[in-house]
Image 1 (spheres, rainbow, N blue to C red):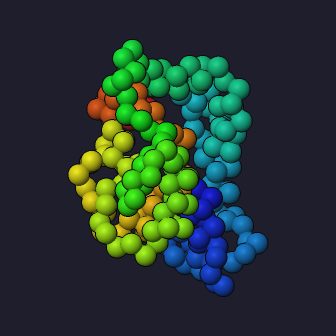
Image 2 (tube, rainbow, N blue to C red):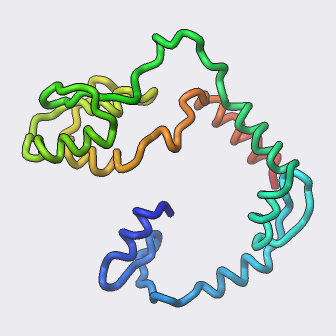
Length: 181
């Protein structure tokens, strides 16, 4: 879980599990899960060394063959960068879709719209989404303010490799799932 989602699960007076919604008991540990992690064996995809799941994270951090395995996957799905910078959409500054004021970064656009347009019900195109490879520049959000608060609490740049080819990535994942045990 990401921190904001986990915090949402813990907010109510009776915190609930983010998956099954059963009540969580603060301070109690998932001993059955800990035991399973301690007793389940796995194999490193880099060096083929066998170990318990509980040791895998520290092993992966120090195993150069595992690091190479990960980099092979990254290289397999990354396109060669284009040299014509004019073909890249601007994903750093955005205009307000309500008043057309320009040059907001993502966070600034969210704050601007909260402050000046929170009651505006006009359907508008999200300039952040429209700039993304998967974005539809004609899609008008029925509730843009809610869309901003749900979809744009973080920057896509943190999590997205715009040079990765989605079809190549899916093919690579399928190949690895067949090869890995």
